[in-house]
Image (tube, rainbow, N blue to C red; front, side, top):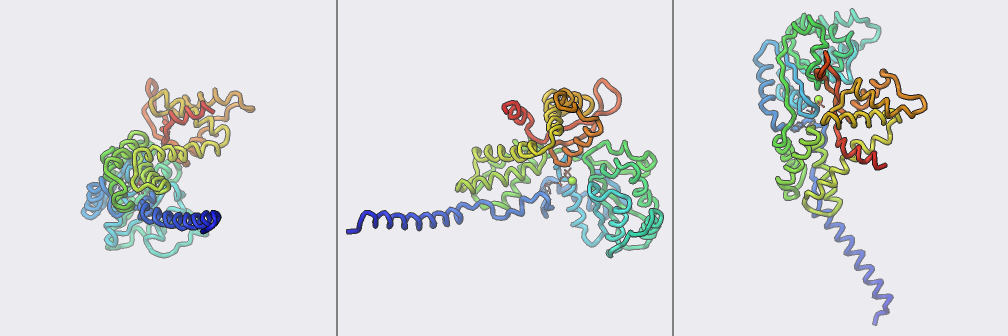
Length: 395
Ligand SMILES: Nc1ncnc2c1ncn2[C@@H]1O[C@H](COP(=O)(O)OP(=O)(O)OP(=O)(O)O)[C@@H](O)[C@H]1O
Ligand SMILES: [Mg+2]
């Protein structure tokens, strides 16, 4: 007869083996994500649902027009960049595409260098060249006869136009020499108001305002992501529709919807379940909101935190947006009055708003002022500011 110790030892070994086997099976059977790359929001998918017609139209107009000039605007995360990039990809070798992200490249020198390098397909050293010499190089390049069309894309063009000294020098040669097509992209539909008047009228841009993705659009996009990135049977259309509706109501930004689906799948895997469910979506939403604001907020400088709270309080008053100046600035001033040196000046305050835009916590737009002349800059929280305020007041 084996001793009781022996039995325990035996049970222990069996348990360990079973545990390993279960672990193996749970990993094998309960894997949900088959390709994480599908959820990479920096990736331009080869199939872009909802924007097919737009892409086709851009491709055709570039092919058929001698010069094509387009301005695309609309809220963040509604497929502007992806659609234009995809159109360029489809045109492939038929054109010479020059894509410029103006939030990264926005000085006269860096843009000229980039254009010259891409079009000539070789490195260009701008060292020791002054602005006139660079302008001459550009002019020569633009006047060179070539069979392929030049197509320039200025993405986030507001970042260039707001640097007032640059944009005229950059766009003028493109309008004056050769036949150049270009596409300007911006979240700010009113950015033309800031463009130099003469330039604006010479541009003769076709304007396209892309609306935010509706729940049905988001569903279509998520269906594609799920088909490509998740294993069959790990999702159903109803749960995808729940994610779409929620994302559309709260954020309207497709990036968040995609992240929410990915997070839901990751949590489902971690729980060892084989299908995403409404309960898990709720968990993922909490986690996502946590990562959006609750994780960043404690890392911000003290005054910037007061600015966030002020913008949220103002957004609550206006059903989802805050007038940044003077309203939110005044509210911030009230919140910060107990601080040792009081509130920061309005210049630092504006720098804070830029930080918040960079952190993608808020969207900024211009809006006609109510009861006042001119326009006001508004901030729209990209997170659930009501829950955030509740959380803050509980602390
Ligand atoms: N119709 C779509 N189908 C599939 N994926 C999409 C679609 N639209 C957007 N995406 C995904 O969402 C990401 C963000 O989209 P995109 O960069 O085109 O938005 P945007 O409108 O340019 O946003 P922003 O205004 O912030 O620059 C893309 O990288 C892509 O992965
Ligand atoms: Mg974009």
